[in-house]
Length: 323
Image 1 (cartoon, rainbow, N blue to C red):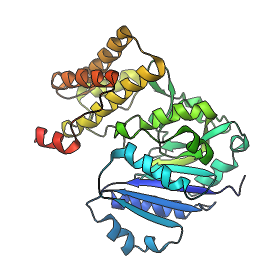
Image 2 (tube, rainbow, N blue to C red; image 1 turned 135 degrees about the horizontal axis):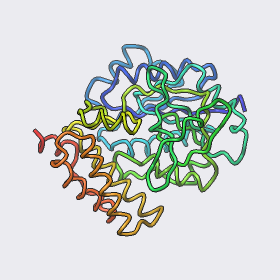
Image 3 (cartoon, rainbow, N blue to C red; image 1 turned 90 degrees about the horizontal axis):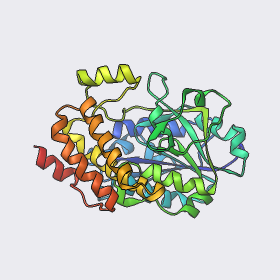
């Protein structure tokens, strides 16, 4: 198993400095990756020029591909998986540009006993914050809500089952990726990884390998905490940060996609749907600045998800609307 071939994929957009750090981390793995594929999702910050300037494009294992249209996270990962499948490797290791694997992350991932189990479809690297704390938002169970795994899942040697995982350090068997079909591009952003994970579970188990670590540098949410949020986080033992209003469109996409996911995979009835929507509104009251401004948008996009309506304001249209 130690000689298994791996194609790493990195999706990037307008974060050239973080991308360079991610790529250096991948190219310095103690167990070398066979190939690194980078998809530049219509960056406008001089990504290619930076990679050229630092000599990264001269690395023979690295392939740089640019899209002239921003297809979002889901469209980017859809295209990335297709590119990696053409490389003919046994595993595909996915991540965003704001992730950086520890030098031995791949070696530890493939050395885990579960990597040799034919029933394993996906190996999940443990995601940590830059200070080393586990970032629980990336490895989850799927019930009424998507909830982080319990802390004991991260004890070395546990290899806990995962229901759904983010694409940060998500290592899938190439034959499973081929069998389950492409990432759902209509999602644009949010829960595309969870939906793909649930499909992967039909072909095997998703296993967390806690001794393999990848640093995720940008926190989900990412805004400043209101006083209400600080109190709620202390009481609920969470670390949630609300998105700023200019980035609220991301929350709306995630809500829409989550409601679609629930309706398709758990056949959520009307009463349960109403309860879930109310929960999102309560979360806005607890955490978000100007919650009454946000709640009508939350209801609207929850209904879109239930109806399978993927029409939405583009990020550019949202920026114009919010000034």
